[in-house]
Length: 26
Image (tube, rainbow, N blue to C red; front, top):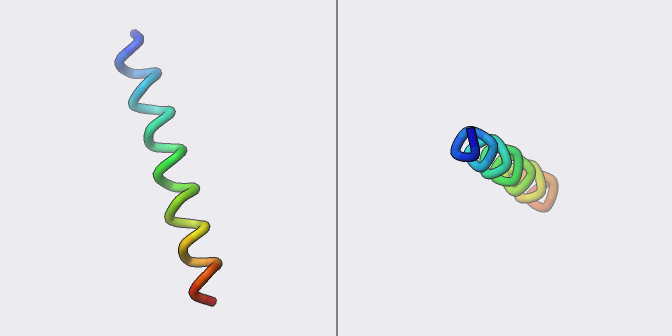
């Protein structure tokens, strides 16, 4: 469904943001 696709996209973007913030603090 479109909702699942949107949720998956949001999850991937959120994880990349977390990864970027961790990389900045190191």
